[in-house]
Length: 143
Image (cartoon, rainbow, N blue to C red; front, side, top):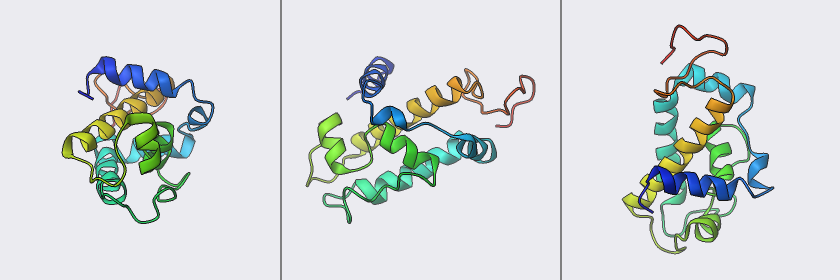
């Protein structure tokens, strides 16, 4: 897992063939949250969630530590199979019972970010420079 854009694209493509994983999309309230907080801030949330809930060798409540809704990062984690150690093992080859390394955490964050950008571009509210804007606002950038 080198975090290359080819590898990220390949992994997202593989995940997009899972009927379960494709059920997870950003909804209107998630889009509004992006517009209010911005991608960098939300990725900071993602880093804390991954560090605190997934990185330990044996996380508390593993398998149910990531809610199915309530924050865009939770949605992204389920969509990218980075929601629990079992999914990390099955989809990304990250062993259970071993603390995640910094490079593994970075990979997870890059995958989540790539998924976010795909979702936001689909909704046409993210520009090539990763600025999040209001729908229909092609002039003024929010972030």
